[in-house]
Length: 407
Ligand SMILES: [Fe+2]
Image (cartoon, helix red, strand yellow):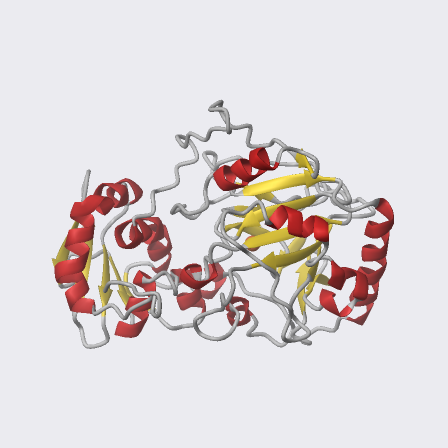
């Protein structure tokens, strides 16, 4: 299964992979990486519809691969083609479960998500992300200040190093107050025009049962908002990336620039987004590296609903994080002001928790756009978020809810 420039994702044969390729990868260094990621996890098997299966048994320093699934705590059944996509990091557990393209034949489907960092280590040699032990350094070798902020006039080598190391970057004062006001005015028009079920907006419900707008994806239909992605200041920031990334002009009205409104006390819908990576639904192989840019139009703080990041988590396998767990990582926080911009690699673990205040006049509003490698597109020809929009009321179901009770 060696990749060639014309086909970077050759089809993986289920049996050849498990008998020859995977044992070699594990011996060549992926085994210890995966064992670290699979510590304290039970065993996992992949099974084809015909019954052929292989089980991964975690040990202290390696993963044992066994034919069959007798000893597997959790068995995931997938078509051979899907398994090939999993190895190539084109499909991921969450997207496959959401889209009902894989099923849990034994054990718990969520256990597969726990295994994902170990699978990424086994298949792609990606190191395990441990927020406690990761050692990040600045350009001079000192411990990285993960909450450092920059301005457009700072040393571009320092900024590029920070982005490469942390996976994100906050830049102060990129847009002036008058520009931010114009963006807010256009956002208000979009808010007024949004309709539930228009497939161009995301809705949720608050604790009082009130249906509330969370996001509009047609920001690029407004002239000032449409100018953000190609603004020279944004281009200067995107050029900090090691790989050449660019804005791809929207093909439809629901692409290009999204406006996000944070609201307090949301109980339904995808307004508050827990720790995730943007390729968590699938598509790492084709979509990454890619940068997401958030232009803050109002203050972003814990009170108004911030965006936070796990430093150094990009290009590593991070486990699912329960934000209510006492050992949950804290992440890097910024008090972003109107006109500030964050960039983050889509593969960086990040979260948009609920605002901690419920009585403010205004919460976070951001304009969001993306920069990709040339020709990067979803391997299934549609955006991964589309699988989330299965409901007429425009709400997006959480994965845990969808597969709740799944045994
Ligand atoms: Fe995200």
